Length: 263
Image (cartoon, rainbow, N blue to C red; front, side, top):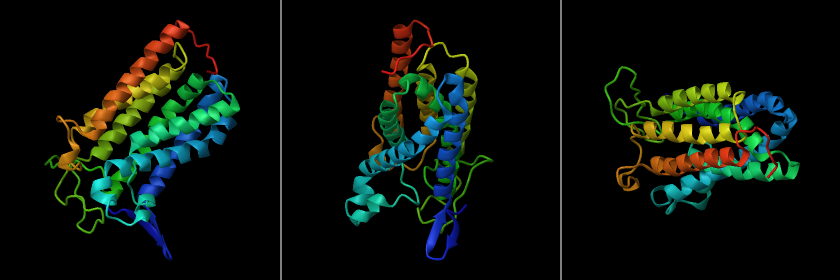
């Protein structure tokens, strides 16, 4: 497995960038197809795309730099902060950035907040499932050593330096669980009882699946494990509680109705 897809003169194109971009586009396409069912114009989702992409990339890179500042950036040239083409993005940071950027767009277009979030949630899970394969080819987010039949082994010339012994394909675990989450959310979308329910379930479901996968991760430096939990698991706790709070508050607010307000 190699991170480079092809080279075009002095430019190197990485599989990570290709698959993350593909995940964004497929997720947006999926949300645009679902939007009319909720009474939201499909073109509104398409117009929101650049906002979500910029917010996600800025948020994902910011959280990565904060998390690994001491190990990778404290002594490195300042421009390394912006070198995202070969990896170095944290999904939870991207989720927070996309949410903030999406809220700004929704306010500008006067769209119903929670109904729009429900439209986007299944596509987010689908796009993430695609993007995780970029991590597999890139050599980041790898797992602990194992001797299972489906273990993966990275080549010694991988520039990110993952282990060359067999490890858990945690990127594949994450992708498959997210694909199952997408299927569940897409099925539930037409059966939701109130606006915000699908988005809340997405947060809860992703937090649980991510915490499970984190148990098999092997790429965290020892100093990043606190009280036996990885950074991803600590954030998952708060995302789970946030999703649960949304479900309870929205149900209480609307009493099971799918009527939404633009606030």
